Amino acid sequence: MTEVLFVRENPWMPRVIRADGEFRLELDAGANANHDPRSLDFPVSEAHLGVIRDDLTRHLLLWSAILPLCEAAGIRGPLDEPAAVALLDPILFGAPSDVESLFRGIRWDERRLVAQGADVELLERGQLFEALRSASAWSDWSLVHEYDTNRRRARLAPLDKALLKYLRAPGAVDPALLPEVQRVIATAEEASAGIRIARDRRRGEHAVNQRDWRRPATRCAR
Image (tube, rainbow, N blue to C red):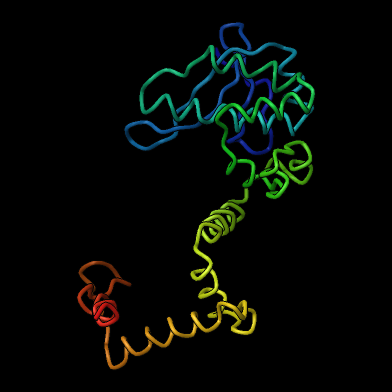
């Protein structure tokens, strides 16, 4: 018989249950062969339950640290219980500086904390407790989409960044890069002049004819 001892208002967060007289932390994570979330669990103590119930920050940190273990279990493998149990005391009872040091040496799900409202700049500096002051139990995945977009942009070359900026606000481009940006745009405009890119409905509502799409690039390469 299973009894739920503690669950936050967000049911996706790890919850504490009692199964056959034993306290266990249970969460839905990873995916089975049908791509549905797997339910995985491992033993915890009553003292662990107390911290999980009273300290949202440590609950979130534990969640982010356990998720990679769930992913590693795959679609049918067992959760690495010793590894999961080994995270409990350091994260739930450790001093903040020790917890942050631990996270510098383990895999953890940064995007999960972003979804909960963590301050991204503080998170990336490793100031986890400060970053999670703004967090909540509810997930907002629009924050993750913004985070992923910003990371992709950060990996772009300076000219690529300048091109994106020029399309939004031409006056904001670094004057040193402006001539090169304008040259690239002029080349693209010349290469695409007079070209009509047809739709290809066989490949989806918004798909385009790939031959038409590649034609401007072919002109630029000449």
